[in-house]
Image 1 (tube, rainbow, N blue to C red):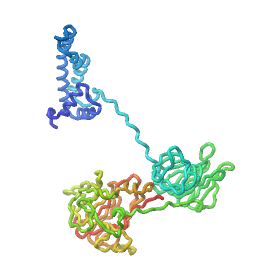
Image 2 (image 1 turned 30 degrees about the vertical axis):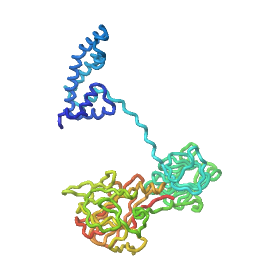
Image 3 (image 1 turned 60 degrees about the vertical axis):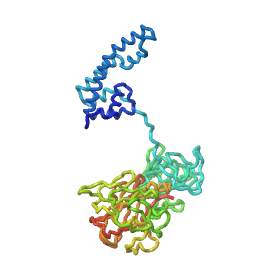
Image 4 (image 1 turned 180 degrees about the horizontal axis):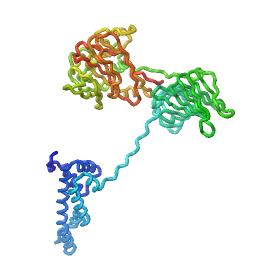
Amino acid sequence: MSNDYTKNDDWRVLVDRLIDETLDDADWPRLRDRLANDAEARAYYQRRVALHTALVWEAVPIAQELNRRESACDVDVCLPETSHVIERVGTPRRMIAMRIAAVLVLFVGVGAMIVSSMPKPEPKRQSAPAPAPIAVLSDLTNAKWEVGPEGSPVIGADMDASDLHLLAGRVQFVFASGAVVNIQGPADFSLTSRNGCRLQRGRLVTYVPEKAHGFTVVSPGLTVVDLGTQFGIEVNDGVPSEVHVFRGQVEAQVIGGSGKVVQQSRLSQGHAVRLDRSGEPTLAEVAIDTKRFLDVEPALHTFRLLDAMAEGRGPDKPGGISMIDGTPTNTHADGISGNSNFFVTVPHNPYIDGVFIPDGVADGQPVPVQIASTGLVAHGLPDTCGVSFDNLWLGVNRTVFELPNGLSVDKPGHAVLGMHANKGLTIDLDAVRRARPGMHIERFKSVIGNARGSVEFFVLLDGQIMYSSGLHAGSPNGMSVDVPIDANQRFLTLIVTDGDGDMAFDWAVLIDPVLELLGH
């Protein structure tokens, strides 16, 4: 590191302001870190403090004499405004303290001494971050609320812990854990956590995916803990509470007057129980009744990626995206592209974050590949020839692919993404969530294949490889891809590489790529 600090005006200003006690709190951390980690910086500081202290010792007698004369002579003949000299140089106590500090720094020579000897600014108080919503209101059907001071919830609203009163109709919530709850009014209920709720009155049905196991519903005298299920609960005044298990298992706990569990039963698919509270509370088995509970399984919706990428044109109206600059194009053929590992945004389409040509090795060494506009990179991608052929093509590729079960990409009704090696495409899942408020993205699904050449397919979530096909050479057999997606994952990246360092005739397709969403 250079020791010519005289050329660094910023450094000199900070040191001078520190010595003069005018250093701002905002600049303190920068100066402190420099002094703590740079021996040459500490040496410079020592010299400046020593020089300043010596000047102060020389200046004090002069300043005191000037002030004495000023008080003894006529204003017209005395030197004006000499009192500021004493204020500038300070008191003898301050000079002694500064000299001691300089000597300590000089002999100890460590940044820690400087840090401990300097006055540190008071830490700024930061406001606590707003709590994350525990659920989203995903659907309403003829819902009538008992309106509170904040008004009625609307579809897509983020919900915090709250007590709610539904006078009539049906509502659906997607919890942060992934659990989906349908509630039929009239109902009084509370959203209590990211993976639980309380039902005081009404009818409730849950759908609990694997990642939300343990979802808990608390009701008067009865607590139900999910073990991977779809189940319903009904609680009404004057009617015994009931639990019906439509799929999987639950653990039903009877709560006594003391608040302790007095009975615990595990219920499996097809079983139902009623809470008998005529005496000591207990569970009695009853016949299951699916007709009483609406929407045993919430609807599963598909978000067709290619329809979204084609901006509503549909899969039968092909179009493309340039791998050079991310602009839309009306032709799939664009020759060889060679911007290896150069990420290009696609501003004209809200769902596509960008495109790139992947190459995971340079000069024999693994290198990260940028896959998103945020600077997110992926590691572990293979060595490629570093170029691509054709545009990213939304439509039927020039080659006909016959895949299992009679699926053919040249038949109407199938959406096709042509990705001749080497190509990468990143989808912004948050943009999809904004377009489908209240709905939860469950997974990515597609059938992938190639008719000629050799390719390798990758599916990434937030830079992590979730699926790799391995080398797939010239086969008409398609491969089904099914990748689960969590609520906190933002970027879905689809990559096709040449697999052998030669991208000639490496024609690859993704058939019917969709996101499956859970909601209304």
